[in-house]
Length: 207
Image (cartoon, rainbow, N blue to C red):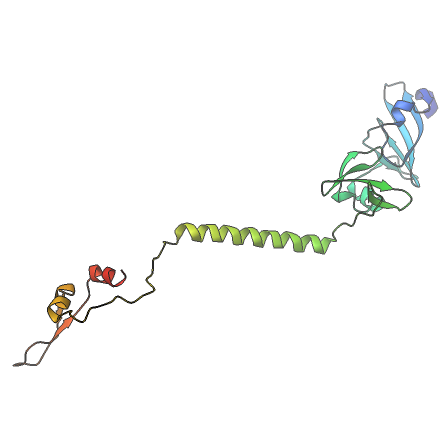
């Protein structure tokens, strides 16, 4: 039994079906088999492609190979450079958005363009990596600044030296610095007294 004996119907795509084909696909035949399966065939650039439905999934038919090669993002990037940066909204017309702006594929310019026909310039792979690293560094710096602000206590400093009136007596100073340290002395000599500030007196110095 030949392959044609299994064909129940073969014809062209309908207008509605053709409107669903991906951009650049030239519809060829629709083949319905007796087992209920359907195959859509088309031409994509120089490749013969097939799919079970107009929306795919699509595969490339290689000569001498019965198993089609599935069309992947790499195939689209090769034919339409920069498509990986596009949010495609309409595959039939290959339109979408990039950087919150409408873009489309221009056959005459063979590249993506904005609505005003100006070319879309995509970042190179190296530029994209540099931008990503810069964003990470900026985010880390902001996080560090916020964390430091939370854990660092507020310190109030005085810009002027405390004033002491000429009338201040030794007795008054003694009352301000009551704590003493007795230094060791040799036998028979009076111990030396060293004034040591207390925490309370340090606060006074900062007033």
